[in-house]
Length: 259
Figure 1 (cartoon, rainbow, N blue to C red):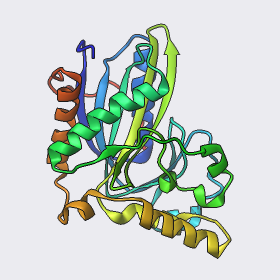
Figure 2 (figure 1 turned 180 degrees about the vertical axis):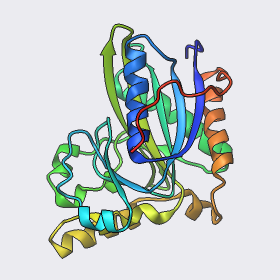
Figure 3 (figure 1 turned 180 degrees about the horizontal axis):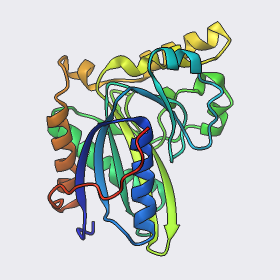
């Protein structure tokens, strides 16, 4: 992995609008020849429901989200709905370097697996590829965590990290943005309560899917997640897996408007 210009930044707790605008700004900037390849970790304040850039928000209960102070935001990447609550989110902005989509998932996934192992959790990369088009026809597939795509990270067959990716092309070259949620607690399961799905049976299937097919670090380890230590382990995982050292943390040089 090319060591030139890589930096690590931890932007802490930010709004959904800020987080997604910053990710896209970093990716578009690098594609135009500005900025640096970046690994960023962050959290969400307030909690937010995000949807993929090709997904509408009609499946969300906007009134319930507003009543509970929950943001609704569109991600610059694909995928389905996610409740960002008790999690550490990562984003990688880097030159594609001729990698296929799956190769990039594999490279980044391997670094995440290394980081999680440093935190003390034994996880694996999902190797099979479900029929996502068929699954997306089902109302019960509304949550992003309803299934694992290839090279997603699982603990004992249950999804722990969900990721999405998008490519940007500009004068600086082909750039990929990948970000994902490292689940730290069970709060993501409440997504079903913020959906406007009418069928009670469908909602129950969504609740059951999120309960049975996902895992979180707090539940795995039996104790509260040390977010600072986890962020440090993820950073070291990339350094050890990719064979370089990040530059010292630098201030973010892109400033999207915070909602």
